[in-house]
Length: 139
Image (tube, rainbow, N blue to C red; front, side, top):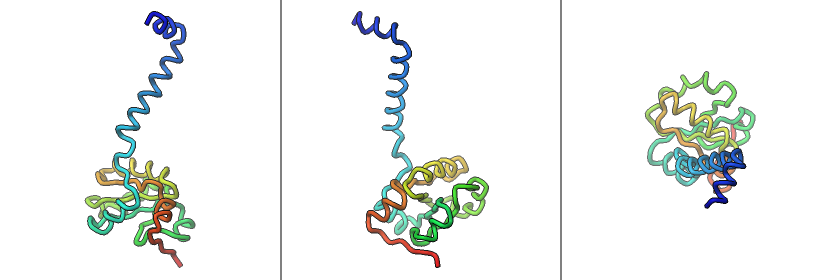
């Protein structure tokens, strides 16, 4: 025990870094998947809860293939276009992007704007396609 105290006082920065990383890991475990849904869960929400799918990829990527009936609002200028989603505020909104990273940020923006049921599609459109779920293309 004495050695642990001595090490901690001699290497304060390392100990603080360890505590910070540990705290972040615990936070991620507790909050990490809150508000996220996998492709199977998303299909259940779409079919049974009338969920709206919002795709935040650039328009060119959206036109190459997207979830059927998805609404495309690209991330650049996303916050300025939230007004067009007001009519869906009381519905579940599933946000997708290519891999799930950008859509997580969009979900946070939606929640701050009062969309309590904003869900990130875990793995994005890549996970959707890997699950062999249907996509459509704009012509």
